[in-house]
Amino acid sequence: MDTSMENFSNWFLQNRFELLTQARKWKKDNIQLEKEFLIEWPLERIKIMELDEYIIGKGPENKSLCYELEFGKYRGLYLSIKGGSSAKFGIYWSKKHHAYCDKINQPIPELKLRSEFEKLKTDLIAILEAGVAKDFGNSAFSYSNSFFTRSSLITNLLCIYADLNSYSGINMSLDEAIWGNLCSIDRSDSVYRQNHELIKLMIKNFPELDSYLLSSMLWKYRDYVLKC
Image (cartoon, rainbow, N blue to C red; front, side, top):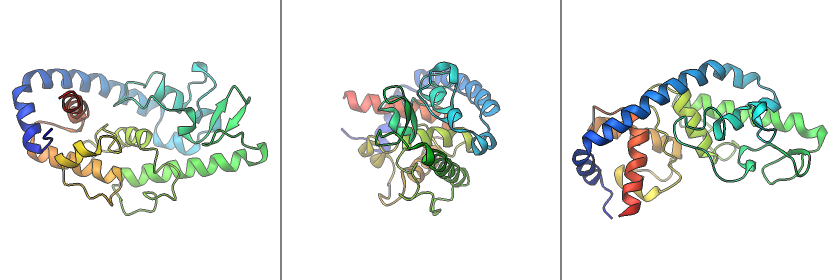
């Protein structure tokens, strides 16, 4: 199916009232959740958080960052990061092993646990700060950073921490053909820069939209394309 900008424009104009009504409601709910998240999880807290504040696996009472984003209070913030195994977070608590495990589901020796987590946290902070600054040439946007390929989580967090109209909640590593036809994407760029460039182009073509509305609307467009 044609997924060009012209096709998106026709789809948007034909369904404009319904799409904007739904997207504005979603935006209102999302902004409220975002405000609450930023109070509870400012970037400064990420920098000093301890292991159990980060990891998933210890249940809802732990209220960790990963749990709250995937299953808890903030599961509806931007687009869902649900899916896959807990290993996607780099470190998690395994009830099976009764131990902290790594990205390949192996228990981490106790003597290495703190250094492993500190490296993970350093990588997380680096890619978030580079993304907020839109410093796409930064080494954080490379495979040397363990979060570089965790695009669902990082895209979600960049939407929260970055300025308005910087990113949408769309995970650009999925359905690449759709986004590539909407925007002339340089395949050598990170999915984060691709996301930013797509949002800039969409807002230029549709000034009444912003990154909040586009997070909802682009996902609906994706569903429309995949069903045709």
